[in-house]
Image (cartoon, rainbow, N blue to C red):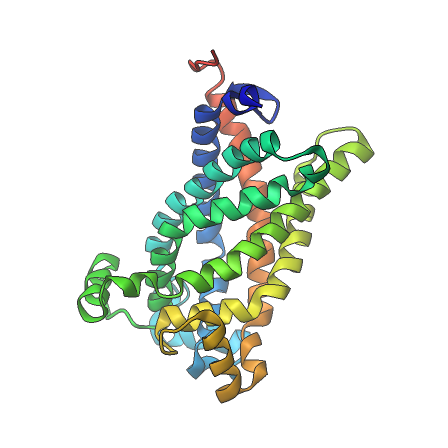
Amino acid sequence: RKEGLRVTHLRGNPMSVPKKTAISGVAGGLAGSTVGVLLHPIDTIKTMMQVGKHANKGFFECGIQAVRQNGVLGGLYAGCGASAFGSFFSSALYFGTYETMKTYWNAVLPCHMAGLTASLAAVTGNAVSSLIFVPKEVLKQRCQVGQAAAGQSALSLVKTIVREEGVGAMYSGYFATLLRNAPGAMLKFGIYEQMKVFIKRTLKRDVSPKEHFAAGMTAGCFSSAIMTPLDVVKTRLMTGSVRPSFPLVAMVEIAQKEGVAALWSGFMPRLVWSATFFAVGMSAYELALTTVLQVTEGAPDNLQ
């Protein structure tokens, strides 16, 4: 077991744990920021639909309104730059921790519990990456609902939020994010990794890019469908649409004031965005990982 924690493999390549963390982190950062930019318009519309004043509007209606009011870049891509920047580092932390913790859980879990390796590693990755992910989401979502003044930079908005609401405001919705992401990650990565194992064992070959995408889409659909109410609560807390409180308290408050249906606001764009994000994200991660492994092949690595 000690050997398993000192020397490990990444996609069949033997390497030290620190090198595995670094390579998977860089690949994850590249994939996360790229996919975040590509799918940002869908995320903007989802956020608008989940905030009270837009809750009764449809997907295309919200999109058209955003473009009419602020143009394509200022409307659908509001907060995109800050989001891409933050996504690189949060995704790097996520995947670096995820791959490293898979090594740890593989070493300590008994054989009959090996199927939990990916799920437990994903939860650990979520907890670590949320330290960057949550402030990034607060900033992005406030831009998406129009809380940034015309021409105001991301850094200026951060200063405004901290000055008027305190540093804690940058971590609004932190526990709601963990409550949403932790079980969601367990579902997504658990299903995704098991589907990869099934494909490899059944077809007796490596998983193809199309199969990576299909596995990611399936896992993303299951997870996003179940976790939508917590995503609504997270969005309301981050944008200041509900008073700061424990996520489950906020959920009850929303249901009492607006009806249970309000907890499913933005369900379709979230389903499309989340499932597509995970499918494209994992495909991009596998591609980026393969590329980084090729680039770093032969790089010094102390395995002794």
